[in-house]
Length: 352
Image: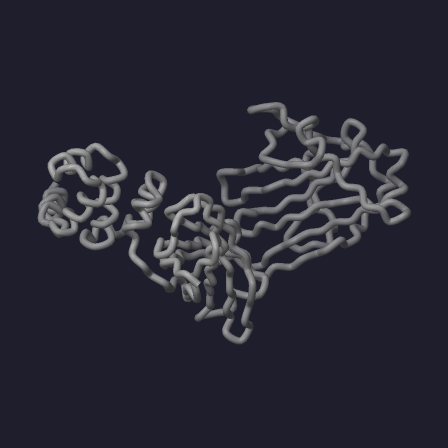
């Protein structure tokens, strides 16, 4: 109780600068009277969150530790207000890796931004770096945005990314602020392109064991016909076996067999959330023509444990009487390194 009372007394002494508060009130309230603006502010979540964001960024040490959470909530409520208050910071460093804005400019309705990431302490960044869908591009206007790797300098261990933003509403965006953040990335990637899989397809029998699973995803031309039948639907897959010989390090080959007259082939990856190891199988006939699966389905086991296993299963509509005419191939991508951190930059758009 003594600590609780001390904590309360310390926080009661912390107050935002009154001039700063007045600016927020004027910004949030438009042209109405100051009294009405103050009342409106108390009723508008966006304005209240804006106040919290400014305080967290400039005044209160306790709130400052939660500034990322407050900013994300604020951005979801009002991107324009959130970006208005977030300070410009064109470079940052975390976990021995530096991220920096090289240039940011506009031509027509497209903004192009070049950003670099440099490893100052090791060799975690290479020419295969993949931001792994962990990045965010926050902007105060309606638009589409992409980010792609466009260069790598081995001497300085620096990767360069191009962010392209296309504005939708003919809005003047010169001077607007953009926030780009990254939480994690993959590197040391290896590509196995169209490699032969040494499996004798003439000896494939009906699967001895199968199971019903709730699909976590999938695709292919007949995915909806065979797999997706609404929320809670289940589909039949191979019961995973012990890993068999496979030429791809980082992916296990856990099953092959016929189920209901169709060929099923299954792979698995342990803890794939930090690897993104993936790929696909295809068949080649005697003339060299590729035959793709009619659908593929993914599912997971041990979801809440440290040994989560992700499975992918590929299904081919080729009867056993015809399968000897084909050979099995695959294309796969694996990564050998996962790096986590907190990198964020905020910058203004400039006219070219």
